[in-house]
Image (cartoon, rainbow over all chains, first blue to last red; front, side, top):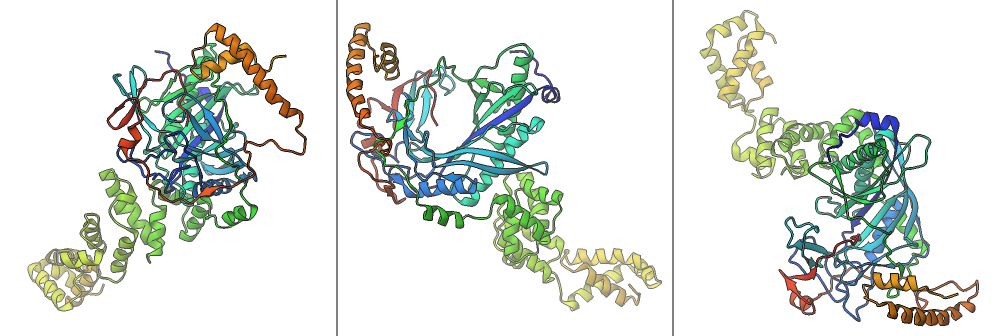
Length: 499
Length: 101
């Protein structure tokens, strides 16, 4: 394909996009959805399996209470109604990623429905409608062999590991989101980001997109202004927040170029290509897939008691957006300053540093300054830099007590990041404490004056600014471990000049 | 009117990966129709005050605690597999099927 894509600004001037997102979240329960197998990530193939998740004859599933509870909490956090009566359903299909030849899911009776999530885009609040939140089981992992690339095309056989089969998976489906125009890609990204933060605050999942515990499918369509919504495509394989944004954008461009050429959009599944940022058609389907859903006969219905739901609702944590708003007020930050804290991924770190005793200003200074710089240089996440909020608070405590000046504190912080111990230990081990012994300082000052008689004379005659050279000399002999202000005062005192 | 058409039986056979001959289609369509009509008689006694059920026992909320229970060893798990490689189940490639998630 050598078609040149139209410019984005041109596309959004002529078409209106509608997006929708389906997000799958692996719950962080100890055990699988319908059996007692562990759920830890990784592990040798087929070491976390049992007759239930292998679908062996005679085995019976029993639903995991913690997974039901987590799903209800997600629904409540997304302002959903909780179904007083709900059932699991069998989704039948022939694909070896489920050994039963069906997946236990929910169909027309999801556990949670009709909610919303407010997200902020460019300072504006966009309300994303939530269609449903339902519970199902994850599938196994297939390794396609015999082909060139490990992809299914060209493969001759598949090797299947069922460790992941049966892990509780929550599917969160938005309503279509129209009316957002050129912001569509950013809204999509902001929604997934906010959803991830909500899930993290609930503690229901580790929400790691790169490990697949949070996965996203993006629906996109275009229509002419005032016309009916266009045919949508579904883009799968979108594995990072950045990819969510890119997938919507590239699909808008692709669809516009098809429509501009007088073509029709085919309702299909497309795959996001991480390398090019574009999408590629998946396998075409001649007819809509017939999953022959029917109520799961091996499981009894769910009827969450109102009292239980009310109890879970009362115990929900503060929503991330409101939490951030409250912190911003407490820390006295402008929107722009708060945004740079968010961009650096430092909200929780600063919050914890403040909780450990530092002022918000000092906590922000270290995390956004020295530590962010090092994180950028070494390409690690700020949270993985090697310094803890507690250590940063301790470091600031040493500065406040006059034991470290700013330069020494940076050196100590280097030691902390290098894993040399606590700031107090590093200060002691490396002998970095500010020299506060006046006797030693006076000796260094006298030495500097003796070594620079010309400068000393200038200061005596009233050129106080010249004292800087003497301060520098003293700092050099004390290897930067003196307090510059004290040194300056001492010099002026010795030379009988007024500061 | 028949409860199930010959075309519907052919569709179901395809979904179930059953190779059914033309003659068998005639036979099974007739048999399935008889079965469905017999089952449909149950519908004649349904009343508006009895909700449809998927389970014969009136139970709800049968749940288990989130506690790990020992499962199978890989050798046990793979013992019934037609073929295995790298401690994984080995199956023929599948194309033209959607992956559920």
